[in-house]
Amino acid sequence: KVPAWLDWEQWVGPAPEVGYNANIAPFAWRGWWDYGTGALGDMACHIMDMAYWAVDPGAPTSVKAQQAGATKISPPINSKVVWEFPSSQYTSNRGFKYNWYDGYLNADFDRETWSLIKHSQEYNHPDEKVLGGMPFQQFGSVVIGEAGKLIFNRQHSRWFVHSNNDIDGFDWPDKTIARAWDEDPYKEWYDAVTGR
Image 1 (spheres, one colour):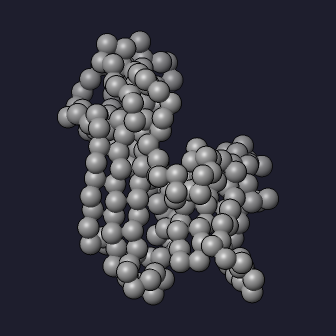
Image 2 (image 1 turned 90 degrees about the vertical axis):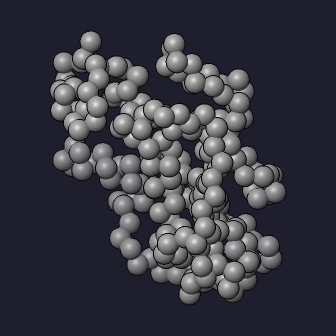
């Protein structure tokens, strides 16, 4: 039954006409090609934004992808995508490589219940060497440079610096982009919605 608050016909818009299904809306539309683009369009577009702001890579010279579970109607259960970019003023002469990981490694989609069946909790992630043994679940992005790693924790909006050597003499740049109130974008969004 269509919820009273939802105009289903308007919600479906130009997509193929289908009856209301709670497995599509309000949340899981991301997992259907007719309405969304899976993890790449739902999450990667935000997480990868940091790299684009930092190194302004332009168009990739190469894209390689591996996936499991994609169908004609739904995106992959897991994927790994590697983009290679040419060098720029912000990268080494070797250019820049971006690796994306998402999804559960040992899972199947059950069409009868329209749900993801996880046979284990193992999430697709970089090799442990990349993170130096730290639990990958904490991090949204790892930027690997010649002198160390910047690791971004999406849940707490904080960067961690892990250097190969001492970073004596490093001066953090001044903040030039306006920050959210109290550096809390969630509170800023809530305040905007509630008119505070």
